[in-house]
Image (cartoon, rainbow, N blue to C red):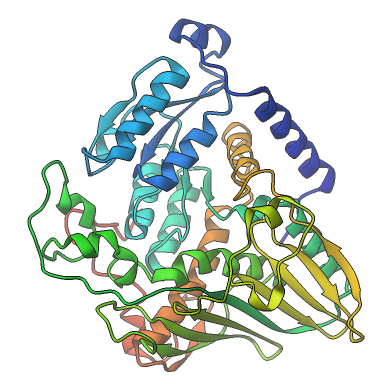
Length: 457
């Protein structure tokens, strides 16, 4: 992977910081048009207006040249939708358009880019449809539901010459690039083992009876490409626990660690994968495992493991004080850490501002870097990079193809588990499993009409 120039990176951070410090001015419509001409302002629309997109859109509105025209959500009675509409009206002195269907957004020529924070099973189709409509895209992780879909997203971005940024903010954090520089300098030595952790607390899940679709909720559109099923409020509220929609915390928090680990080892696809685990702690109604250990093989010289639990309350995510200050996590209880084993030293890395430390064979700290995120999840530099690339037409830090390779680690893990925890060989060029029909049946989902991604993008 090509690293970005250090001076360029620091200049971007400095520019972004000075803009944010000035605050987001509240302008009238006339003032806004007078100060920011059509060639300078960037008009966004939000698709999927929950807590995550509310945070994203409010963050983008820190930049005075950003406006938001549409808020799209299948639940027209959702409180977050109307709270965000009020926020935009206060910040930009106009009411955004509210719609339940993204097809109302894509034809609008005023819209430059869309911010997608729907449930995971809509990330891929919405991104592809947006690219086909000539819109740039900021899409939350994981970018895809399956391997085939991710490759189609890359094809769409390239064919329609779109900027697509994946919401893996570690790709815009300077301390992670310093860790990459340290590794690439050879100071850590030869790396043959990497361990990635996603160990969290949790409890059992029971879905309860099916019920009636609430008024104002377009349930068919919410299901989208997923198979039809009766409405169940617990399933809709806990969609991450079902394969039709995603792969639970493997695809949620785990996506960040896997992407960062892949960045640091500078690899694309593994050549083999083997998962083990299942519903070990809770015999409940979830489909996804509460305990999972996956081994990825990169040829004959590198092994990476991923460990997931949903029942370990003593494992802790990195606090905001550590993320923003001069501290490191207590590594052995760090729920979302990465361990990189080199022949000359061992590196601990904490995502989202956790920083990193290198230890030698005598237990001394050979090198370290604090995270010092300017905000809790380091969103602002990632947003700045997206804005810059909308203007420059360069590929962003977390380009769609980068997101695809990282999302495939999630898909490979889940496929191995779903076929019976078998070890699978994988062809990186064809992006298919070798001599395993059942596994290859999960490379692509069956898309429910009319929410179909075409073979030819």
